[in-house]
Every structure is written in structure tokens, then in C-alpha cells.
Image (cartoon, rainbow, N blue to C red; front, side, top):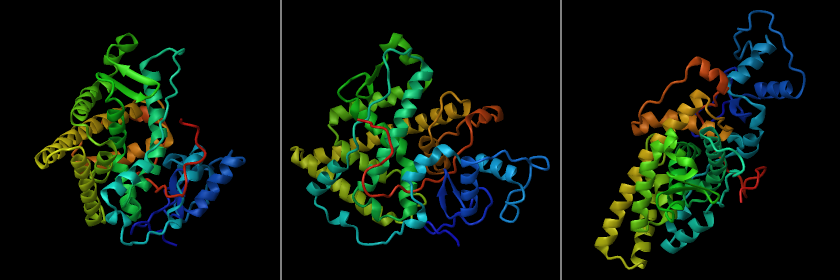
Length: 384
């Protein structure tokens, strides 16, 4: 049976048969899903009768268990992806029904209330002041923090008015393209009350003079520092509305390859109307409101430039195996890299050397299953 997700047929990454869903971190058929499950739960001391290079396809997948299991690992199947499997249901279970979006009938005050209710929780880093502080430990803290923020971002996205009325394809595509921009906006706004510093979490505040002057030595932070500080200086000056601006950034991240551009434009108009409403309530004249909107777009350009720089650095860290990248963060990184060059004209990123890739493990596929369950994320460590 062909799997149709957003008008697109998915194939098993192992044998190229029709995929039944997203299992153990990749799109796979029921046969390869069951084989991998048996292999990781029982004995898997398979031996290839040939040269460990058997072809694994729909017709020959049962001919060599050793090579089939090797192929499973090569395409990115992993036991540790149980977390993702529990959070991301199979697209077969998700039926998108197009309807008139209630978001378009919300008043500005109702939109503000909805976005306040959608706010993700405050997340603390795992920083331990008693442990030595180094570039590797710092980047490990930040990638761990980003991975946990991504989970709550997906929860946040499905509560954004109008988002769940998009097709499955558009929901996935927007998340894949905008995730780092959303994280960067959170960093900027958290840092607004700390001029010259970056507040990654309530217990992780950095400045260029702190920690023995190491701030300027960290290449990744050094790359992103200037546009971050420039952005949040502008944000302080113009008192931009965080929630509304974040949604606008999210929905306007890309219109390339989207199926429902008109609907997204209508929701963006509603968000713009809400921003204008908030400015009017703050006492701004019509001319000041227009100027403020233009200034927000300038901040957005800084955010996107900063996101591209951060994406390059994250990918290069992955290639050089500087710090481990977690499952969800790794998948989002690869998905963004797939879309970014075409949609943003991003600078080409450093390609991994073969020896480096051997130490980083398999790469997840360029697709993000849609997290669409009722209630909060389960099975995650406490973040507040």
C-alpha cells in the first residue's frame, strides 16, 4: 500500500518498498521495521555468507540478515530513537481535513490570548558550576538545550492559530525551515534585559568578559555574537512584541514549495493586524506604527543572517564530531540543510570528510514527521 503524506509517496529507506510510517528514526516498511525490532531485542550475531556487500532491496531483503541490519544502521535506524517514535505518530494516522480556519476569525485580543496560552515553558540548562568549563562542554550544553527546546517548539507550533489547518507537508516544511530562527528569537528576547550578554537559559548567562575571557575564543559564539547583540539592541529600543513577532518569523520563513501559500498569507495578515493593534494600544500614531513594522523587518533580517551562520557552525561541528548531536536536533539540522541552499541562498557548508563521518554515526533522513498529539510531550526529563 502506498503511503501518501501531503501528496507524496514515501519509500522504505532500507529496501525501497512502500513505507508504512516513520519507525526508529527513518521512513520504513513494516517488514524492515519488524526485522530491526527483532534484531535489537534479540540475538543479532548475523554472518554474511559473501563479502558484506549484498544488495538489499524489496526482492532481496531476506537473502542476507547481516547486510540488511548493516543497511538499517547506515540509513539511520537507531534503538535510541524510541523517544522520537513515541512522539511522532505515523503519518498514516494523521488525516488532514481542509476547513475554514478559525484563526482567521479571531480578534486581535483573542490572537494575543491564544499566543500567550501557547507559550513554551522555561527550560534550564544542565550547567554545573563545579565542573571545568571548556568549549566542548559549552557546546554540549547548548546542543542539549536546543534539542529540548525543539520538543517544546513543536508543541508551540501546533497551538499557533492557523498552523494545524495547513497540510501535513506545509506544517513539516515550515518547522524544518524555521526552527533555528525561532530558537534565535528566544535567545534575543531572553537577553534583552542583559545588555552585552547572552541568556541561553535562566542559569546560563554569558558575556565576552566572563569565564576567563573564553567567550571571544569560541568560534561558534563569536560568529553569532554580533548580530545577536545588534538584534536585541534594536528589540529593546523598539519594544517589539515577542510572541507575535516569533509567529510572523515562523510563518514567513519560506513560501517556497508550500501548498497553501494563500492561507499562510491570510494568517500573516492577521498577525500583522495584531501587531498594529498592540502598537495602537501603546499609543503609537499611524506613522509610528508603519515605522515600527519596518524596524521589525530589519530585526528579522538580522535574525535570519544569524540563523544561517549558526546553521553553518552546527553542521561543521557535526562533520568534525566536536560534540554529539541529539536525534531530533540532528534531524532538524539535516532537514534545514536540504532546504536552505535553495530557499535562502545560504552559503555552502563544509562537507564532511569520510573519516569524520565514520565517527559521527548515521545521518537521519531529510524529513520531519509532524508532531500532532493532544496534550503535552511525554517521556521527557523535567525542563523547569
